[in-house]
Length: 474
Image 1 (tube, rainbow, N blue to C red):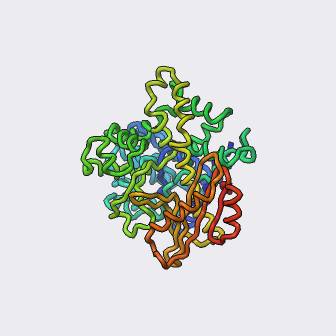
Image 2: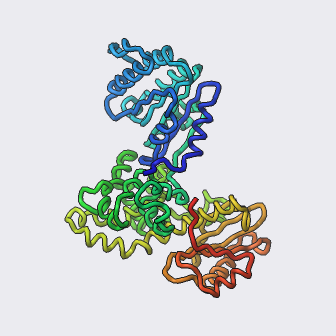
Image 3: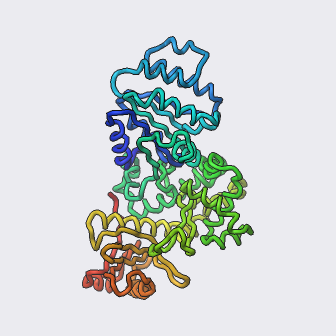
């Protein structure tokens, strides 16, 4: 099992801070299960480091554990006998007795210290200002509760604001690197086809913890049954657990996300489905966006996205969307042992309701990365979807300087794509007003099942038409 995948940029960022000639204050944060702790462990390996995983215990329990770690790190065994403790004294002893080299101090789940002591950010500001910032060391604060880390460490109102020297919000793994998780497993990436990987990615998303769970033996359906759709399954209640850690009034957030998952994407549609005034939803939607659980999309050609009235809300996490579509509505049946019926619902609707949309997103990302690496047909500076009241285009990529634009359709069907799909895409492109009559147009078709001979022959003669059959795995 290869659980450390595609974190080169993150490691480079950490190493850059470690190479500073003065104290570093690094903030690493992101949603749970995304691999923050694993990244830190990889970074501090073979470096002098002291690591505290804060817990939800009383503040003194965390303080005692940190005291013992500092005693071991500095070789000061007498420190373990000190019972009249405070944080300043422990950090002073750490600085006084730190070994040679540039030590790293890691406080993981930092937010728990702030939960047990509301004044901890102010206290820690004093520790940094008076004790740490003039030393040759690196401090890493790591947290999972995104709203708390942003408010208590990164926001301008926080006492710690302006102290950090770098920060990184850790994101899930992209599809292009997804297959690396299977290199050392019985189902190697050479054996798994790109569409098999896509189906598994549509369930797990790019969250390393979920990917590891789904590396067991058996088909995708058997893994879903075992890990999500069976009474007592490990992931049966996972999104509830994630939200409970982040927000109060969990019921309101669950209702909003369920509504979005089931096809209500406009603010007016969500408010009507929940019988709540639109203005009453703004706070909840904003927090869900901050948590990276949903995103607001607008047509890619909109000049002022924030003020656009065409905004649509989408669930931002493939695993969570899958759960709200196929697990959450059937929890009673799962608890009653009716897993067979639930699995039938999943199999019957998986592609139409979920996998086809994940395929679209992966195609957009692949086209964007292709333009970066090859500059063909042109360098895309902005990519997304486009729609109006009558029509929708899966992919629109553009370069705002050159005026080039590419239109794309993604077909996750069992039939080869024909000329009709291309002709319909051409017609829809006419409705896009961006740089009309002053642009160079290109077209791309993605197809799970290939293309007709007529379509292939046509594309071979046209420099501005691309056909994309296989997904690229880096």
